[in-house]
Image 1: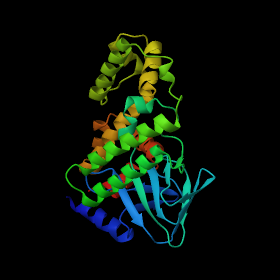
Image 2 (image 1 turned 90 degrees about the vertical axis):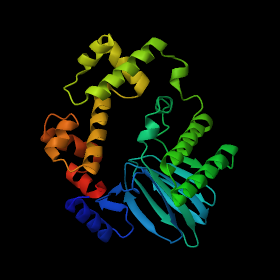
Image 3 (image 1 turned 120 degrees about the horizontal axis):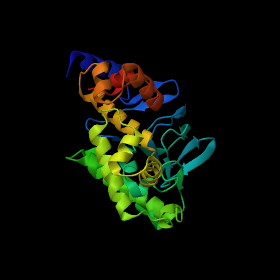
Image 4 (image 1 turned 120 degrees about the vertical axis):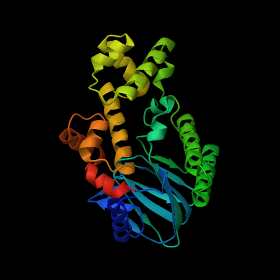
Length: 300
């Protein structure tokens, strides 16, 4: 570790006693254990968290008593054994009552969103799920959340990957039992040839994101008109071409910011942004902070 990173880490740990709740106004930056993108937090202390937002998805499993949530203006009283799932970027507050306890799960949804079939289900990652019906699905999800908590506690080899395997199963169950009939692709199947071509185009983007790629360039590579390619790409990936390319570049930039000592100029170049100014502006718009701030929070 560099002197800069060590100093930042010490400052962060000293300033934020819980080690992961980093605030900038109402925006929270959730930090995670090394080499992980999921954290489980147990608490039995009555506490109130004022309205805030973060990119992470949040799940609460109440063990005893109640946890009061307000999400996007709607109130939920989460009682013993009930589960509340909150999408990323949703404004929310919480208040845990006396003699209550809960597990709180915070995780980045990028891995789940990368699965094409889940990504194509409307509302799966954008709505609140309140599981309180005592159904088999509710109980199975509760059981898997407890298994995730155990993995987090033990932190054995590949625990984060194993935890995400449960998250995938949880969201598959949510889609099957709480969003039935929501999948439009059953009515409008995409041709196998289109699927193969779009997959090839995505690989091309992933290999050439550092270059000045345009929709016309990738459509031409795929052998489609820009209009047909744009429509097919959106249907199969859930993203417009421009948004997918931007997301890819930002993912690369985040990795460089947290794992290297490269200058901002070099990070901007290696992640495919035309200039530091463009990089800074785009990063702040999408992440709510500057690249420098992001490195200070998440850098090792």
